[in-house]
Amino acid sequence: KLIRYPNGKTGTSYTVPASVRALGESSFSSNGTLTAIVLQEGLTTVEDNALHYCLNLQTVSIPSSLTSIGERFLCSSKVEHVKIPEGVTELKSQFLDECSELKTLELPASLTTTDDYFCKSCTKLQSVTCKAATPPALGGEAFSGVVLAGVTLKVPTASVSAYQSAPIWKDFKKPFLTLP
Image 1: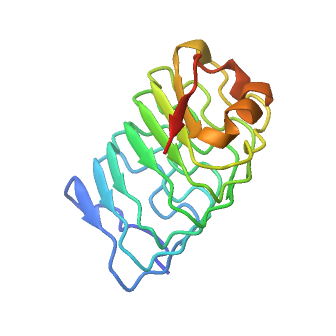
Image 2: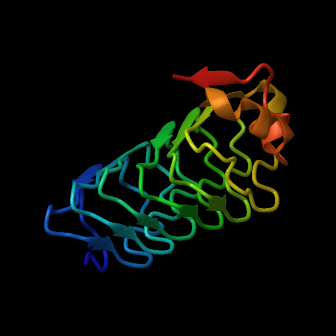
């Protein structure tokens, strides 16, 4: 488990050691120097606030082994593209809250629910792909501050009608695009 990124460490990128299976609570929180973090295969858990408030963080490689993501995952970062791997079933409060540069988001078929302020104030969001056959339940204020009528939504072909009638999902740009 990586408990804390060393204070005073220099450099703008960091590769988490391959032996790390969990990022501890607040382990990178409030880091103002890092612009890129590589999370390696084998990492399964990112605890609450681990990458919270890394204001200059632009890229994070997310491994397919990740199955658990805590609160405020990339909250207040500058990430532009986020792809959550299969196996993740829940995304906690403030997952991508205040990610002002976020353009694309891909969600796995395994996702069933999200908590409050999921992608609040992600004003540059252009496209969301959700592979879940059943629209995941979205918490309150999920996309608050985002004009969903201008955001493309890609969903499984057989699920279009379910998304068109699901709370919040129904507000995305029409027509919805379909996944093969």
